[in-house]
Length: 58
Image 1 (tube, helix red, strand yellow):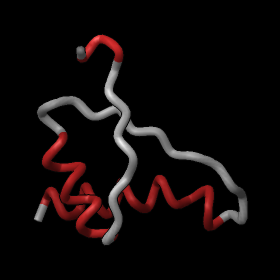
Image 2 (cartoon, helix red, strand yellow; image 1 turned 60 degrees about the vertical axis):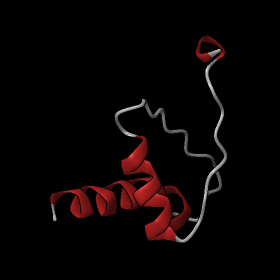
Image 3 (tube, rainbow, N blue to C red; image 1 turned 120 degrees about the vertical axis):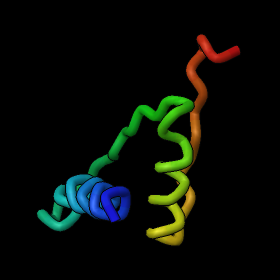
C-alpha cells in the first residue's frame, strides 16, 4: 500500500498546476530502479508518457 500511496502523492503533486488553471509540463527523471514504479503510475492513470533517454545512455 506504500507504493500506491506514493503514486497517488506523485500524481497529486504533478497535477497541482493543471488544477490551478495553468498550463505547463511535468518532467520526471527516472533511473533503472524507478522504472517499474513509473510504469505503475502510467497504469494508474491509463496513459503512457513519452520517454527520452539521456545522451549518456548510449
